[in-house]
Image 1 (cartoon, rainbow, N blue to C red):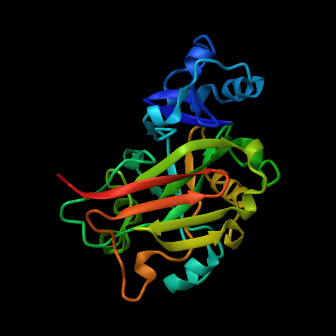
Image 2 (cartoon, helix red, strand yellow):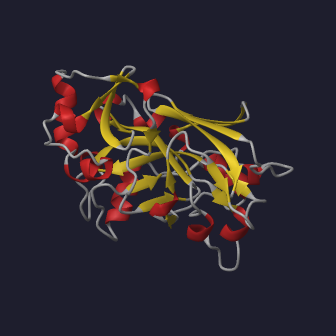
Image 3 (cartoon, rainbow, N blue to C red):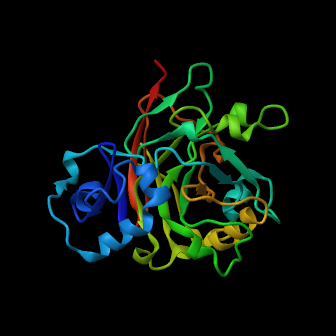
Amino acid sequence: MRFVNADGRSGLLVADQVFDLAEASGGAISADPTEAVFANWDAALRLSQDGALSGGRPVDNVQLGPPIPRPRAIFGIGLNFRKHAEESGMGVPDVPPVFTKFPTSICGPFDDIVLPAGHAETVDWEAELAFVVGSGGKKISREAAWDSIAGLTVAQDISERTLQMAGARQFSMGKSFDTFCPIGPAIVSLDEITDPSDLRITCKLNGKVVQDESTSDMVFDIPELVAFLSSVLPLRPGDLCLTGTPSGVGMGMNPKVYLRDGDVIDTEIAGIGGMRNRCVPEA
């Protein structure tokens, strides 16, 4: 299943057609994408597997928003790709470094990234694989981790490096400006993904490849992250976790490269989908 937010309503993306889930289910599935992920995920999955869908619209005729517009929580994982840890000069961590992004930073897969006034000089990109919590729970074992996950999506962990590194480090603040968490275009259910441990993540800046790595370079895989997070706090349906970025961020380049007005970022994960976001100044 490929669950999308089409014109603000819960939808299924099948080939190049989008089907309204509320209409297809006779109202049993919420039209609100966030509520559908929270409460109706299993019902949506069953409906997608039935194949009895009609009344689809071409995907080019709808606006795709963030597939979960209001996640309860957004977790981020730092230094979770070996080569990125090396380029950061911080070494490979022994335990997952966890931070949070505020949910107000969410935006859609084709929305503009707003370079914030007063903080626009050192805004960086981070292409990431993200998982969306399904059933969730607390103290979830590594072996049971995949059963607690609804699906996977593409994300960008946009980061304002000066604020992020200020003082005792302000990761949450530097990564939580409006539009600093593009996600989408779909949440892809696990039955459609052959091997989550070997997915290609690529990021292009103005057409030039800046990140290109497999999730096989991860230090901590998704089951380890689920087990670690849930050992401390309950994971709830609709929680979002960005699992870390490969090498190739602007801060790691020599000279450093940061996002500017008019720059275009293309982010793609094989088998999941792609996003395109243009950078614009804050009005």
